[in-house]
Length: 283
Image: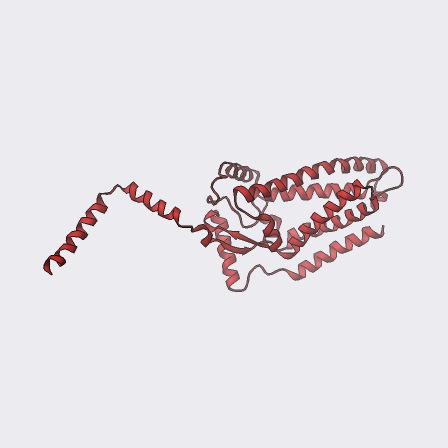
């Protein structure tokens, strides 16, 4: 009996000495290996509401109307092409105003980054494609590159739509705003409008390529997020600013104060966009 009790303390001392004599780096390596074997990333993912309903409705309506406009001009249905352009112009009016008064992630001020920060993000993303959740590489809303893509796309669409609204085929077809400009301006605008078709196709191609890139290399389902409004966020992949924003959103969600849609602002913006389309329609 006494031998059994005396053996355990000796064994414990021996184990402690053995643990103390092991190199520190070996202990760290074993801990890292243990953490790698444990799939923690998915368990830490947070489902966060990012894109509000008006923004998602704008996005998918624009996709459908863009396709319709492209097809209608190719089959020489110019009357329908002009009508589609009027509807797209109304969508753009809505998006521009919603970018000022909409929900947090819809506002321009929250996703337009400086050129320096944007290039740094693009560079770090390209060299870290094998690290899915590198700290500071994921954003709750638009990342810096995505934010500028939104701006470039909107500006390109505005130029395309405006030049289309004042265009003429020099025979009998004219845009609804043709009467407000000179003939020489209308002819120049028509040339720009045709050129912008190529520009938009290139931008759409880049947009689709970016979606595929993020799906394959970053494991981010951007299309699904634009359908449901929710993104799966890995907190450890966010920078300090985005992590604080995530914590605030989760806190607001629990206290039932989450990203409430500014309904009155939405109705006013919708009324303005609808009024714009109605005015163009009757010209």
